[in-house]
Amino acid sequence: MSLPLLRVAVVGHTNTGKTSLVRTLSHQRQFGTVADRGGTTRQISAIRLGTAAEPLVELYDSPGLENAPQLIETLEELPGQRHDGPERIEQFLADPELVRRFDQEARVLELMLAVEVALYVIDVREPVLEKYLDELAILALGGRPLLAVMNFTASSDSREQEWRSALARVQLHTVLAFDAAVRDPMTERRLFEKLGSMLDGFGPTLARWTDHRQAEEKERQSGALQAIAEMLIDTAGLRREYALTAEAERALQLDEIRCLTRQREQACVESLLALYRFGRDDYRDAELPLVDGQWPDAPLDPHTLAHYGIRTSRHIGAGAGIGAVFDVATGGLSLGAGTVVGGAIGAGAGIVRSAGERLIERARGRGRLGVDDAALRLLAWRQLSLLGQLIKRGHGSPDPLTPAAESRWTRERLPGALARARLHPSWSALNDGPVDEPGRRTASTRLRQALAQDLTELDTPTPRKDGAGTGHSNDHSGIV
Ligand SMILES: Nc1nc2c(ncn2[C@@H]2O[C@H](COP(=O)(O)OP(=O)(O)OP(=O)(O)O)[C@@H](O)[C@H]2O)c(=O)[nH]1
Ligand SMILES: [Mg+2]
Image 1 (tube, rainbow, N blue to C red):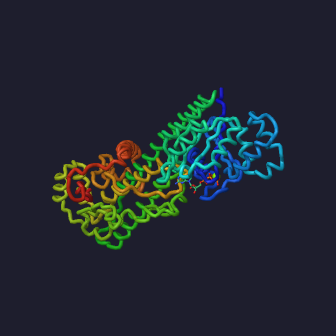
Image 2: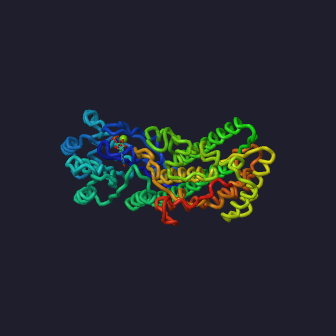
Image 3: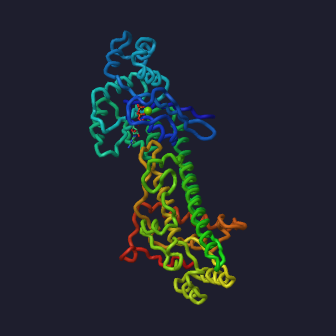
């Protein structure tokens, strides 16, 4: 049996963030028009929330109320049952002259009679003025339960307490702080639970919706971590060869590595934005680090790395001037040195073998290029911090994304799964030749787990282990 559809009106004074709230609750960035002035929304428009199989909730955005003091006087003058609010509204709506005079308000009142419940959105930076209390009195005539939603509670000039006590004095006790700019699954869940407790018969509908949301959230996060993991595996295993005698070919291959890395990172950014239903447009006015959906600085640029405090490889050698790209062939490692370095850091046979393979390449007169650890750490950090912000970003948020200040990726070793990926060019989809899909899948699953852990710690700076200087403990970048 299908569950009853719950219709919810979003009402309130003009410019309080009603449309922004609908955007955030529906995760639809494109819904309606949002602007910092009154009278932006002129018509009622609806959006459905539900599972693929059934609609569960219908949210109605409405024009802002602007003329409550005059309207309340008009409503009081109407004949009829003094205590029958809905009847009074029907009388008002039946009078074309009044509907023309109060056209915005008339649309809202008509909506109030058509829904089961309403969210009254408040800009808590405003003082509690008489006109807002008039609005509440008018809306109460509709006979539908009202949940007061306090927007802008994160603002420094919030008057939340003032509003709470004023609302209690007019018998409005169901109140929730919910900033439209912030997406917090717990508060969102609480909002729907509150609605459930205010209404008879909609508990199962709302429970189905909140469970669906929770599952969707989990799936989205896992998809995002997979996108980051695959981008890192592709980049870690990226290789280009060149003839040792052909300097021009080397420069060309380096350019290609830079270009591929940048494109691969951009593809990852776009996957994350799409998963969280944001678009490139969200970055148009952003200052750092995304401009128009792209990171403004190429990840392999040594200046970028220096900017983020990441030390580049000490084995870059001749590559130092051209970016954090390792080049064993020109880095001057002999077979002995390769073995010693591999052994000294305890990285195991893989690295020694890998270094050995490159030396064999060298004997063939070929050099190989790839992406440095420092660049990989930067890539991981940028994507994780982007994900961290997307998770918390409300679709009604007007603010641009800003980069996280610091992360453990700037100072700790690569997770095992990524270090291994570096030794397996066959896991990378950026090389010519067939991709070892099973290997890539296993590495991606492992790396995703490591990234999930990092994500939970994103906001918690990791204490420095070495207690000194830069805090970078990974000093073997570039030798793989
Ligand atoms: N920082 C911040 N800004 C918000 C928030 N909610 C809304 N805004 C901004 O407030 C302004 C008004 O938002 P709207 O969603 O258009 O408000 P509205 O109530 O639909 O306005 P009308 O349709 O004109 O009645 C816009 O500039 C929004 O970006 C919020 O939670 N935080
Ligand atoms: Mg609006």
